[in-house]
Amino acid sequence: MIILTRGEIEALIDCDAAAKAIEAAYIATSLGHVDLPTVGHITFAYDADCHIKYGHMQGDETFVIKVATGFPQNNAKGLPIGNGLALALSTKTGLVEAVLHDEMMLTDIRTGIGGAIASRALARSNSRTALVIGTGPQARRQIEAHAALMPDLSFQVWGRDPVKVDSVIADMAPHIDVNPASDLETATRSADIVVTATGSKSPIVKSAWVQPGTHVTAVGADAPGKQELDVALVARADIVSVDLASQCLNHGEISHAAREGLIKADSLRQIGAVLNGATHGRDGEDQITLTDLTGIAAQDIAMANTILAAWKTQVQ
Image 1: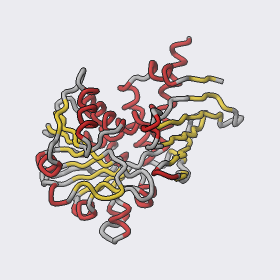
Image 2 (image 1 turned 135 degrees about the horizontal axis):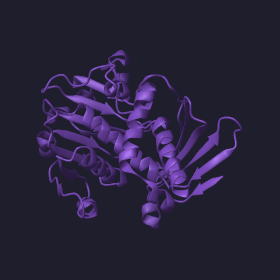
Image 3 (image 1 turned 90 degrees about the horizontal axis):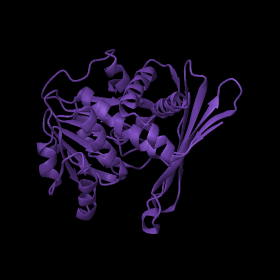
Image 4 (image 1 turned 90 degrees about the vertical axis):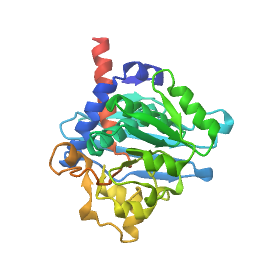
C-alpha cells in the first residue's frame, strides 16, 4: 500500500498534467463514463462541514473516496481550516492501494484548476481582467490556476477584511501581480471575468453590476445553504454551465434560482460537453456566461491518478 504525505504529494504535482486530467474528467463525466454517487455532507457547529465524494471512472483499476473537511473556527486555534485525504481502492479486490494524506491540498488545487478551465472555455477570448472575490485558500488557488491557464489576465481581489486582502496579495506577489479592489460594485462592473470563492450564505454579487460580455465562475456554493450570486443574475445569464446538474440543482449556486422557478434543468450545459464540442459555449461577445462548480468526484479521481502516476514514474 502506498501512503503519501502532503509534502510528498506537493512534490509530485504537475499543474499542466493535472489540468489535462481534470479537463478529460469533465468530458468523461459528460459522456456518462464516470460513476458518481450522491455526495455525502455532514454539518457541524460554527459552519463546519465535511464532504465525502467518491466515484469510479470506466476502465480504471481503482476507485477513489475523498474526504474533505472545513472548520472555520480552526483559524483562531492556529490550525488549518481545511483537511482531508483520498483513498484509492482496487476494483478487483477492494483493498486499499493508496492513501493520499493531502490535508485538502488536492481538493483546493483541483477546484482552482476546474474554475480556470471553465473561465477559459466560456469567457470572451479577449478577456484581460479578472476579479476574484474571497480571501481564503480557494481564492489563492483560483488566481494561480487562472494565471497559469489564461496568462494574459490581470487580477483584482476583493474581501470584507482588508488585512486578509493584503495577505492574498502578498502570497501571490512573488509570481502574480494582484491588486486590491476597494469597491466590489465598481470592480465587478469593470471585470471581464468574475470568480466567486467564498463560503457566503447570502448573495454578494448583484445582477445589476454584471455587464454584458462578462463570464462568472462560481465555486463557493458547494453545500446546502451557500449562495454567492443574486438569483436575478443566474436567471439573466445567457448560458449557464455546470459540472454536474444533479449536484448544482441540489446544493449549488443555481439551486436557489431553480427553486424559485427562474431556470430550468434542460437549459443547463454540462461543462464537459462544452469542452468537447458536444454543445456550444459562448457564441456572442455580449452574452453573460455563468459556470456553477460544486466539485465532482471525477476531479478527485483525476488528481489521485495523476499523483500516483507521477509517484510510480519516480520510483521506477
